[in-house]
Length: 529
Image (cartoon, rainbow, N blue to C red; front, side, top):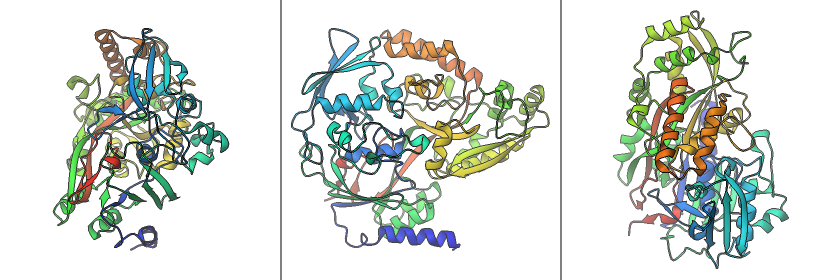
């Protein structure tokens, strides 16, 4: 072992010490590659962050383990006689973890908090004009025109205790992108099935079942304790599962799937994920800061973007890097999503000669160099994918200098628009194209486009995107979605790579189906009797 590897192994052993050998059928020892970025439920729109939050906080509606929308803190929802107003009936008799009663004031506060500038959830509520308390257990959400998808936008928008947030100076969401902090980033007070006991960031988080949970008779609730240990090293993570130190890992490395699945007492459960992995390029600025071209931006020329799209060998990445555990694609949208078509899904054949010709036509026959920012602990084989792409782009003269970092350092580069070339993965919890457009394609404003690091801007495209929130004619709405995608594909604004396939590894004593958003809701988990 190198000193660095040995140190990592020691840290993992310390994090797991005191848990191996003493866990019983009600304790779940869970590991995955990366930790939650924050406990503030509105500060970051990121899968692993939402995963931990879902155990402690709840939205008005949630998606179950099949991906279907089910009631959570709202029991009924429907449009009113005014088609621009949705009415939500709230669940009565619910308490927060500190014993405070849940009511409409908390929903009003939380939705308004989620729309504030430092919230990463604001795009989901961009059509909201107002949230009104009708009575203690009824709220109205008024939108800018009828919004048939409003309920789907609420499945990851968590509800906080308004009094607790005010008392702890956490009325504003944590400003992660600019290094901000608050009490809610390290402490919780939700209504969820589990309560926070202790947390050491990147080492261990312990949760216990909420004895006063409103749903204790509605869900299995067989897990009484969760011990969550982030283990970035794939080898160490698999070793912990094989040795019985952990019971469940959310991301079995592709090279270890057969080994885990063939081990007595273990199994691998698989499913396609609602997530696409891709590269983004700064095509909007006049000049780049991380290239070797002075005074102009190579990515601003669509021929360069097209050349790089043709040089990206998705089949080789699928075969060699992912070991067939991916689905190559030509669009930054997984098949689960409304708007997906086989035509959009198709990707160009690798053609190095044609790509070189495009580079020469664009004035870059001698190529250029650029920094590629890549996470190393977020997506399946993220750094290895970036490494493979370096060689592919080199074939057409694009010299890529790879800079791989943990996601906690990588994501602010995109949010603050301080990267010119980067990897990103995007899931679609609403199962509709509008979600992708709002975050990744609308021009960046106070309400929309917070992850549009391409810097591309089109007033015509923006108007079409905004119209989707209030278009009730589904045929017309789908036609607008198609028009937006056709423009995006023609402009080659992103370089899609593949849709992820999920592989959960677990003890064979666990009954737990893979959730398409990679969101394990442990209140659904059961143990074999």
